[in-house]
Length: 441
Image 1 (cartoon, rainbow, N blue to C red):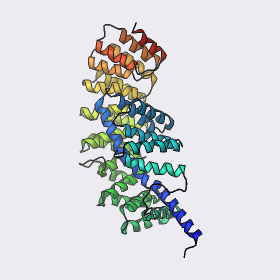
Image 2: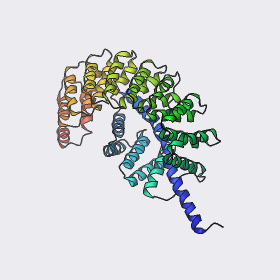
Image 3: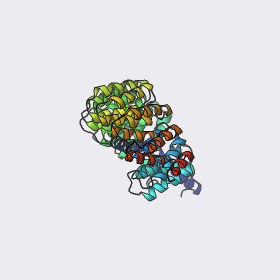
């Protein structure tokens, strides 16, 4: 018979293993699934122009997540949830609010938020990510306690054992993982093995990952190997990733999508050029626009160089709109100069409006001068309305004063004056409130 203390120690070890495994490898899949949701938000932002303030607020908050400004992101998502309680993206906002809280170490708030998401939206496409985030948060709130992971912990114990072996003996990691991949293990264990291969296998892991990326029949394992190739930052991975990213078929969760993400994660400057090649010459339109979206999130001056080249290289208006939106994510003065040029001189009104919408996304207060100048010189009514909406995104006195002038200017169309009042109505500034109250006299 097992001694009671031995039984208790074994049970405790298994509980710890389950907690650790539940957050160590299961959460590794969350960014990929969340990425599909973010892509859809970006596409809607491109399509909606200036007419969807909820989408603009959500995009601004997501940019703060990408910039790892956790406190500001939490505040932005909290405002979104209060201001748009019926929005169809409320489940996404709850997920990212919980994520931002967890990154700040505010685990109770993260737990409360993710629990609200799971209770209010049990069928949400974010539910899987939320359950995995809940495992991580609970493991920090209640260390050592068992949380929501499967009762059968065999896979989890294998994963934690393999991780321990790879951490302690990196020289044999690749060989051990090769054995796991050849054996009759579950897909979940094999996925974890591929992640560990990319993380601990060193330079000798690259050929194995290339082979899996090209020849593996199981799509899940293939995608995991492609992502791992991006994480290696090995130059040998680039040609393989380019080959897959240029494929003719594309879905949000597919090898083509994984290759584009892997290129976006790869540190080599050549990865920027390849993403630009996908955006210019890719065989699938969705892959091309997604390459631009991810390119915009990379750091480095060479990204702006590539975006400026892309604007001139791509003929399709829809692709140009993605390039313009991407320029709105860059602080580089060259990006602003291009946006101003497009806003003033592009032959297509929709492209001009996209540039106008992108300028406030830069988050630079001095850019307001550009919009004020454009508003005064513009004659196209639709573009002028876009400028009006863009002005409303600057919450400062100069923007408020311009909106107030528009309201009082009887030469302005009545509909535009109404829009200006509506924008001012979202402000809690005392002077704005006093101005609105004065209109009633």
